[in-house]
Length: 277
Image (cartoon, rainbow, N blue to C red; front, side, top):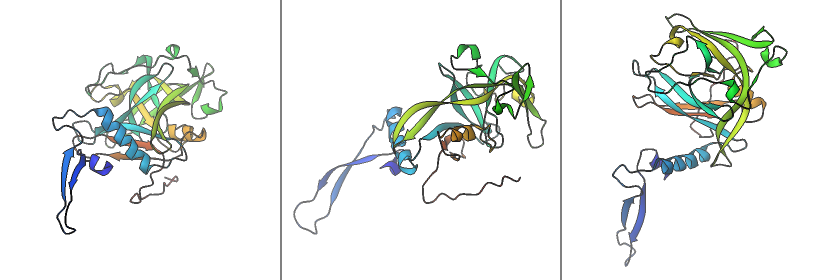
């Protein structure tokens, strides 16, 4: 039934007419589980999809999942992004998924060059450390500052990104520690919300493409292999395995799913990561 769900239709066998002779034909009546007038409750679909996810993921540890938005079609969107929630109380941010960098960062208040609006029709937000009861800055003496620089006993970062054939993009700011709120699947199919502390960047400067409203997002979530990446931080705390996978739709509709955990589908093929490059 769950495989049928993936193409949008679910049928239930409601009656069987078998009666007299052994060789008599079998007649089955099929009815839709959901009405055909597009009145499908999204909560019902999500619950069924969660159950399906639970069947294909290992349950030795909680598996964290993110809904993915956007597509690869230029000039429509040309990127994929997801939502993360930071702080107490949690605030949701739209962040670009980047498997080639390590630092996760979002725009913070008093940011120079940070876009105020986005043509992706999403509301841009700014992280306010003073509004979160669980936030704290990272001092220079903290071992987690080994990727940053020190100014006034606070750990800072300066990041540059390159796009093929284009100019460099840059952002800078200071490191913060706060809670990342996670949607997890545990015990096969039970969905719950948990949180874990992570170090991330609080950007107060953006330049180049990162400062434009064309495809502006609140920041970037880095899935690189360094210790500062979100996947490495969560793995070090025993929250998730140090591995992730994603399924991205390649058509105009776009979207997909990103999972921190191990897929156990027999058709999945793994490729080793060459850390020497």
